[in-house]
Length: 202
Image 1 (cartoon, rainbow, N blue to C red):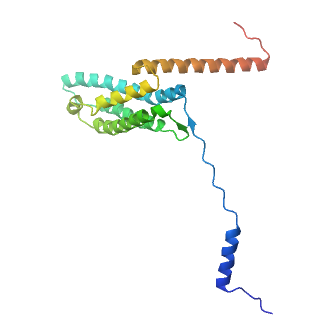
Image 2 (spheres, rainbow, N blue to C red; image 1 turned 180 degrees about the vertical axis):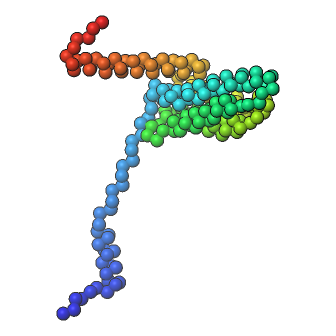
Image 3 (cartoon, rainbow, N blue to C red; image 1 turned 135 degrees about the vertical axis):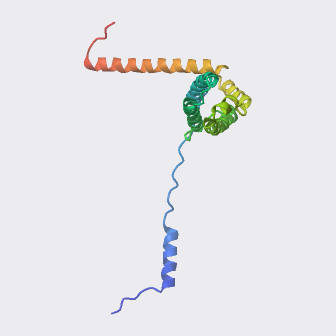
């Protein structure tokens, strides 16, 4: 006896019917986004930009050295170029840190942080260009949009409740981080001592 088969069209129709009855796959829930508090927002901002400020400090030192080297007829810029590339790298990294995927900035700081991100990305591109310049061009170069960069950063610090002076802001943040790390280490040591049943000594 021959096995009866469904016509192709009928079989396709049956598949469509069955497909319509199948449960639709569940859409994965989107991860919750944490809205940063003022304190956390300020900390995240300084974590991102303070390394950039530090990198710029190294560039300032190298520029002073270039001025001295120029008076001696020297033309090498290797150390300066390395310092400037470090500024570019730090700026790119800071821009990424200021755009976290799982956290959101406070509403009143969103525009200011976005503006800082743009200046950081612009600085990174400009740093790559300046790093390749000869000594005379470096010493005669005026950083583009330097006033805008300073104003944008000042507005971000103000809206986040940070000190107006960037050096002071970063110094205070470093001190707070050091104190927090010291407290964490002390807590770990105390727990280890407690586990061993030893009495802490002065």
